Length: 196
Length: 159
Image (cartoon, rainbow over all chains, first blue to last red; front, side, top):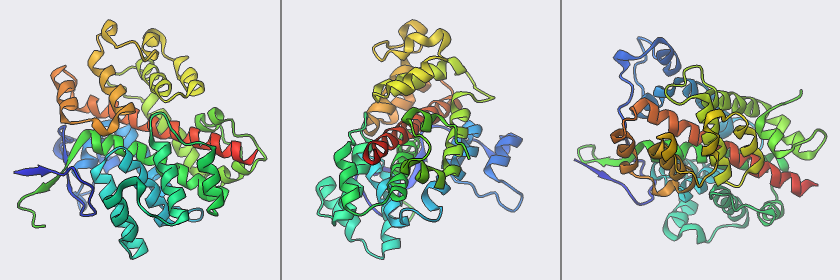
């Protein structure tokens, strides 16, 4: 038995696909190449096996994701995670929110910000800079985007430079993408026999 | 280096501006973004979703996001599916009502997407691989549209 998780948590759930993932035994050469499957590396997550149904997208997605979240310079790692979290909270992607809240807490060595966000929602009491970052990510994630010059002004006043603002736009936007895969193609669940 | 991508052209980011300088620092990301557009709009293996239908759905999603410029770019390639660019068309005439309803919900009401939306497509005869293809198209557009909206705001700020 499994239980679908509906509340935000930093305790990363298991992701259970709503469609049948690609079966490695039946995968095409192009899929195996994109999955980087070798005789010594056959561990591929169900999520990536699901995305392997669209192998052309999968091949470009992973390097783009890594560049936006991890490339040097610009906005700090933890602030990019906050941008990702803002988007994931708007789209109610429990899985993405858990992963990126957990990473934010790890980088910051503090759960204070993500505790407040999960407890009090978007109105949580944040510092000026985090407030400006989170509010922009939330506004940009609406459909259509509600981000306006007032959000840009707040980012500028909080001290973000052009390179940092661009990284925030990219990380929040990227989770508009990731949320529409994770939240749409599967459920975040707790496996009852999986311990915690 | 001259970057020629849909995102930068749609947001009107010109040379010699502060925004352009920031963009140059992330040139690899804008190049990969354009490669991703190719993969979802014009894939070699399109499955049952032709390039024309993908362009129509992309233009429709841009419209739902009030991105008129981007919508017009994609609509130009919509061919026989041009009617679907209009968000008031529900897809019945094209025998795509389930697909169009799914795409609209994923684009505009993401948080309410549930298992029933996937099983609805499966019941309508859409194969699992083709559901993933629809989700990837939709998901990429959510990203590209927001990058454009953000860049336009940056441009307004530094003007």
